[in-house]
Length: 68
Image (cartoon, rainbow, N blue to C red):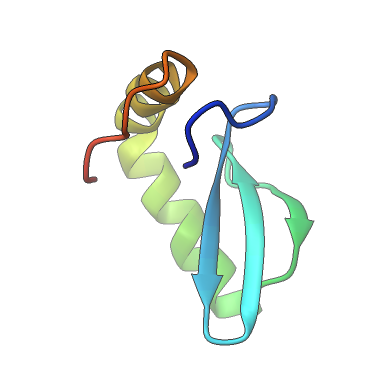
């Protein structure tokens, strides 16, 4: 996540030569990921949704996100 990033709430994934913006439901908003990697990211989102929301609130207040 980046401080003061635009809505909707999302985070960025970089994997090898791939990069994507992912929302908090695990959907790719922009970019591409390999299918297997996207499945892993969707599971990670499901397990960490509350922490993602907390961090989105932090970055919207110009605070650095915490490590998840």
